[in-house]
Length: 290
Ligand code: COA
Ligand code: MG
Image 1 (spheres, rainbow, N blue to C red):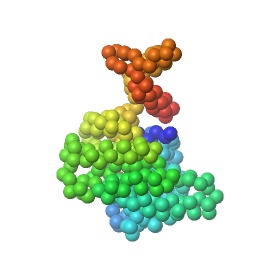
Image 2: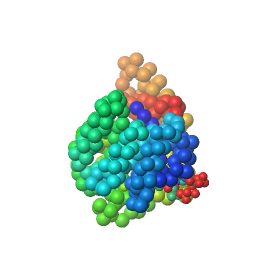
Image 3: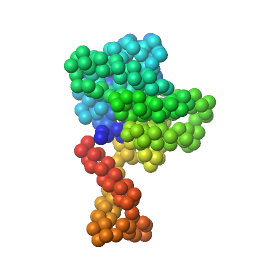
Image 4: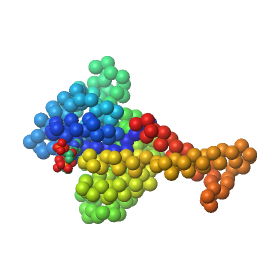
């Protein structure tokens, strides 16, 4: 299990920003070749990203590259160039069919064999961002074992739906819920929408908390100011950890005494509540090692 709380995008043509990401301690760093890069800079960005992935020290951050969508004129050139630097994973935007992931999987497999790399060295993350992607989620989730996570692309999804974006995110709530459900069903991580408002960090924090409550493991971020609070929102706080420890202790003692349920601080504790508490402790332990 890997921490994917803050998933930071950095424009691929901006070497200064890429260098900065090395010290930001975001769980994931995603160097972008897609929407953050204008068509006239695609070639430069591709080379800059391959160089950075191959030479910069990103510390413990997961090193990812978002390529342009399959079907775009940049897709194959992006893939061919960046895999030589062997990032931890490739992020594929606008995935609508399982076949897109299967083709990339075959391409990576051939490269890994040729370079004598461990099979599956580079994993895949798919951005789910159109109505069609959602309708095909089951096939996408089971396309290849190389797929580790799904990302919610709320802005492109809104275009696909003809939805009007609001601060409440109500207009995409069904999709936001559906994505976390499919991800859980197929053992994938789910990474929540971007909060475009990077000046007001409270807004990003509240949105991150709501994502964590829904079951997301992390959130896409676009600015250094959003990293710390997003990572905090996805990490159980001291109070939650203490309560989870007490719940586990009490429940385990009751089980040893042959009892299956108890009242704790005025609320029922039974097996599902115990399992939630165990999950809280596992998440806290993982974050502690970071
Ligand atoms: N990654 C790394 N460093 C970043 C960064 C990012 N995403 N965003 C900002 N920074 C750096 C800036 O370079 C600046 O450092 P400096 O003072 O040493 O130059 C510092 O953080 C403060 O940045 P600020 O001046 O507030 O913002 P900006 O005007 O430079 O950039 C954005 C604002 C929105 C253009 C920028 O945050 C960005 O490019 N975000 C990512 C966009 C993206 O990738 N979108 C695609 C996916 S949705
Ligand atoms: Mg998008």
